[in-house]
Amino acid sequence: MKVEYEKISPDTGSSFRLINWKSENDRYFWHYHPEYEIVFVKKGSGKLHIGEHLKNYEEGELVFIGPDLPHTGFGYGVIGEHEEIVVQLRKDFLGEDFMQKPEMEHIRILFERAKQGLSFHGKARKIVASKLQRMLALSHFERLVELLNIFHTLATTAEFLVLNAADKRFDFSHKDEDRINKVYEYVEHNYQQSVDIQVVADLTNLTIPSFCRYFKKITHLTYTNFVNEYRINQACRLLFENKPIADICFEVGFNNISHFNKTFKQLKGKSPREYKTAMEN
Picture (spheres, rainbow, N blue to C red):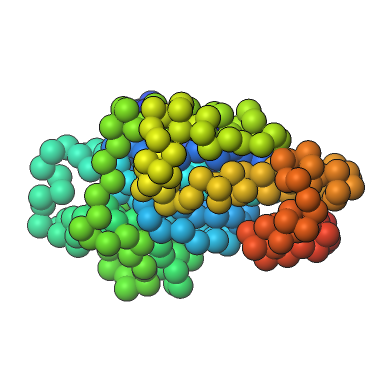
């Protein structure tokens, strides 16, 4: 689990990158990159964290994320099969002056809005989802034409939500990355035990109060909530191994079943038993 700079390169023979990405039980990671990114969730549901915006998303989610806007991998917290179609590109992917052409005015505004993160719904989402799926079978030139059509659809619809305030900026330094990486790696390897906040504060060379403020500022979660969320996601996976719920409770680091059940229901909306039944049906 890392807060990391993601290195992205265009596909060979193309000015942008198109990915049909599939995963099962994806790991959590909080990352950023200078590219714009369109993500369509073809299969699966989970937790969406873009900048300061947090929500649960359902299958069919469509977002447009601007450069250097931190976000989690959409597969985080998903149990079972997960599939996305992703487009990644630089603003100047067709040249420095392309966006300045008069025909691009609406798309130029769209790209500016995307810096805050955009979530689309309604008819526009259905149209773009269909186009993204069709792109997978097209030639590089045909993909480019379809991508421009997608931008036109997104730029001319009112069916969207802005996810972060316009004046909000998310500036990560390499020092921030290194600190948070250490915390995430510690939790990943020690969540089954008592995860001592003094240890992670020492890892980041901060006092406990300073660490708590710092971690909340970077992730928008308290350290305790982050640890509990990680443990519950591990518990979800173990539920499908037919282990007794009491055994799972202690295996993922909780020290009593009552607290485990309460935390599970707060995060997943169901008890562990109800969750397992719902996922099996």
